[in-house]
Length: 204
Image (cartoon, rainbow, N blue to C red; front, side, top):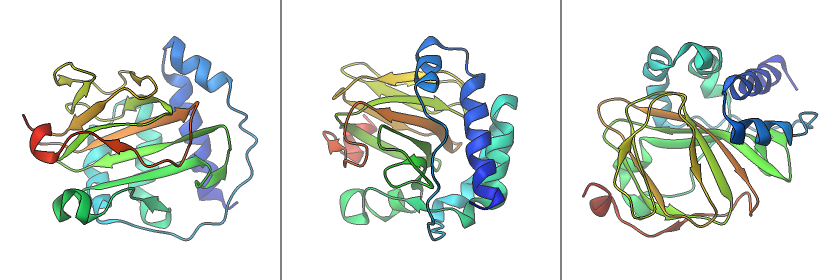
């Protein structure tokens, strides 16, 4: 792999290892970091326009990773699970994810998927669930997160958000974009989430 992809994996790993949380430490310890690289074509998305603002907001532990994304994001293979038919064009123009490693990422891994989710300001990611256990670490603060039957709670950058298998969860952003590191394990790593809410319900 070229230098930029190797640097992406290295900075991603360092960012994860900086988080002082037992769940994250366990997940990191279980990852075999000697992953083969994949040759993927660049796939820039409209949401990448928010990366510069995300870099301004990122705390020190995440700055090297987020600065790399802001500078080289257009050369990476970003994905979208949904289409405008699901949530409308405004959501799609402000949404995307980058799988660093997994079954379809820049590095191959069949047991765990990890990467970054990017949402622009004023966006609701409605209630959804999936079989895989999910660990999120917001790299920008201020977004609101909901899980199960609870209400939305503002999460700070660096705070660990854990979604157990098949637990409903949702996110919504305010004036700032959300960039969050994620880990998926213990289920299908490329499965489309089951949506249980709508954009309108998410704002309620």
